[in-house]
Image (cartoon, rainbow, N blue to C red; front, side):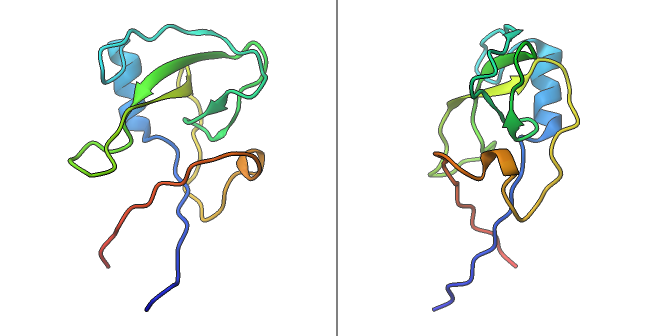
Amino acid sequence: MDTATDLLVQAIDRTRLDEVRRNDADGHGNQVAPFAATGQGEPLRCCLRYAEPEEHIALISYAPFDHPSVWTEVGPVYIHAAPCDGYPTSERLPAQLSTGPRLLRTARTTP
């Protein structure tokens, strides 16, 4: 039995976020409504860090998979209201998100 695991940390795909911002609605028809962050723990899924106070952010509905999957679900996520620099794909969690509660999604890949 192979027990080796690889961790791949990715922010929400910038192309999908560009579409949400361009349409001013998330993939479920909810209008994007920017507001000022409190800075009290809003985890941004566009750049994988916590929002700073007064940053313009939005809460959208997001499904991580855009194809049929047993893991398909919709959940609320915070994003910057305007495009940001994102997060480079990495093999480790960002420092701000390395502690505290989190949920890791598994994805089966074929070599």
